[in-house]
Length: 440
Ligand code: UGA
Image (cartoon, rainbow, N blue to C red; front, top):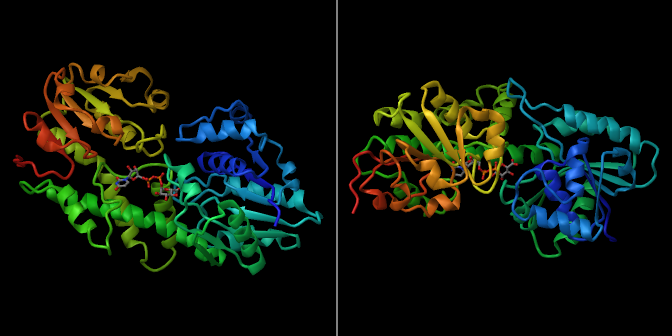
């Protein structure tokens, strides 16, 4: 099979990463988006969000001329495989909004009608089970040369390029065998090495994606519930508990890091969509709702620790280290920092914040109501309390001497990045750490 030509429609974090990795692997790639400002910046080799390796891959692909950017979707008529990676955001009721997807589908029908060359459309956008069979594949039935497959992605922000190069599994949902096989052939050229592939129907593939994210969310809410229990028990630390249960192969050590709750553009959105979808069936969403409830209450744990420490007062200054929803990204979607800062502002505290990357995005939300620092030491100077809210590596390296310029030495480690035994001279509290802890 000769190398197929690729089109990617929708250049968010998944779409742009997918496009540049294809181009880097030597596939002629057409990258399509309606946003002209975005396209201009990509053509100049500048992604509009931070993702490790992305800028390098983008610039290399531009140099080799393997990637072309356009807002003209009709150009896809020359592409063999068309990936759709447009957003499917949450509506107010938790349901996913399919407007962007429907829009692209309607345009593709017009563009591909009457064309003889075979095309494969790949739905990578996360869509609720039955979407592809009910809404996507039906309108294409009259187009004999167009195949549809569902191919969910499992990329983590901050790791997207590496995840694309080393997937743990490729899931292909197809209702016609030849379409699934066509995508499998493309992946065999793409990876060259051995990888695991699972062929299913549309709906199973769609549900695998939701199950994956809902299970990760469940693990986090579960360990956070245990953390909240530990906090009430002298000398008990959730980190020890997580380490112990993680040794059991049936449980595994990952996604057992207690913290202020999960954020980001995926876990909260996908959990909401699953709750909304499963509410149609008899009581099947009880667990999913509980996972959400635990997560929404989790940031309030920080507020309650502050209250107990007597820090919830307009006379106090708080320094927050870490704003992005996790390290190695500047993404603030569903970030706990945004919810926490809003809450702290209501109590009248003076707020100082630091983040290696997310400050410009945070300024767009809070303007000059709070103070921003690129230097950790300056952010901490004169503060009554420090809250660590994102697990950036530079916070893991902090030593007690880095906190000496604080007015009062109150530290709340909401991400468990510091070793409590190094901070015995401080008023040190952490998520999931029993308050009476005595460490040697
Ligand atoms: C998540 C999934 O991990 C990906 O597999 C999936 O492809 C992606 O959603 C998606 O659907 O596109 P992502 O949102 O990038 O990826 O981030 P995660 O690494 O899953 O972290 C999500 C949140 O959970 C973060 O706020 C993180 O800090 C928190 N978390 C994670 C914990 O609080 N504890 C943990 O042990 C792990």
